[in-house]
Amino acid sequence: MKISMQLGYAGGFHDTVTEVRELEQAGLDTIWVAEAYGFDGVSLMGYLAAETERVEIASGILPIYTRTPTLLAMTAAGVDALSGGRAMLGIGASGPQVIEGFHGVAYDAPVTRTREVIEICRKVWKKERVSYEGKKYQLPLQGGTGLGKSLKMITNPVRDEIPITVAALGPKSVEMTAELADGWLPIFYLASKARERWGAALDAGRAKRDPARAPLEVYAGGAVGIGEGLEPLRDMGRGMAALYIGGMGARGKNFYNELFASYGYEKEAAEIQDLYLSGRKPEAAAAIPQSFIDATTLIGPEGFVKERLAELRESGVNCLNVGLVGSDLKARVAQLDSLRNLIATS
Image 1 (tube, rainbow, N blue to C red):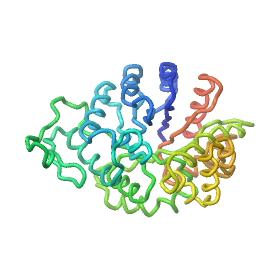
Image 2 (tube, helix red, strand yellow):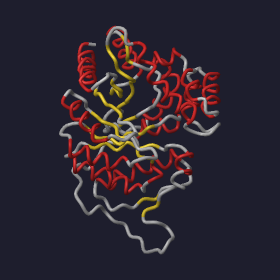
Image 3 (cartoon, rainbow, N blue to C red):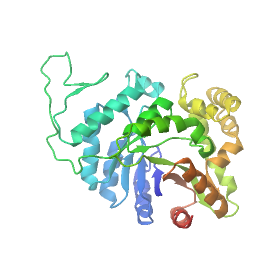
Image 4 (cartoon, rainbow, N blue to C red):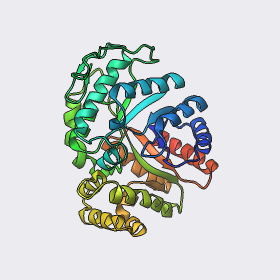
């Protein structure tokens, strides 16, 4: 199983890159660079490309509404060139609060747009003249001045196909991801409920998948801390879970809240959202059920972590996405080393 890790939204990026270099030497395979509504992700990816040698550099994620499909392709090709073929394009739809509130772009047809973005990107990287008649994107543009012409990329990409991973949650989006994408990056992945929640969508998408394309990579996992007496560290994830389940979207339009409710936590989902939106954030975090916290981390004795790894594998996860606990870099590197050893012997 490959091991990936997500960079946070916050600052201190120079120190973070120092840590990534150390984790790269310890065996980290992929680093996800977030982009919300702070610093852009691409600048940070370029910096990482210059400061690392082996680790895969993935956008995690670039919202599709913030860039044209051809710019997404150009961006991925640029980072791929800087890194010597180590880029991955991670894309997603984000949500209407961010897309319409911060970017001023209508949030419509996310599944259709994602499909068309993937198809257009692959045309660009193959240096085809980009002619595309989609429901949401037409190249050249129909209307306008009428002077648009079909163009192809003028530089030579390092690779004619760059891996694309989609952060998808809804059934139609997951189905499209299983059909077209190279990877799937779900958030709040609960292995015991994965088949019930996404099995039909994954099966339908894979049935339409090009047999020449490699199997879908599924990135999921949780915080990692291997050792005795570490169970209290599982609670470190409560704040982020409360932010997404409670506050990342309006009532009736919070995809993370809907996902959490679909796991059987309907009452808790409503309570967490009520608490968070009323400003009672610590209480919202405390309301995350312990059963969910325990089932979505890899923190505990070696035997517990082995059981979680087996459960993830059985549910279809073939690439881990983790956060490493530890008071300093040395401790986090040690946790990565322990995890790699467990994977090798499990």
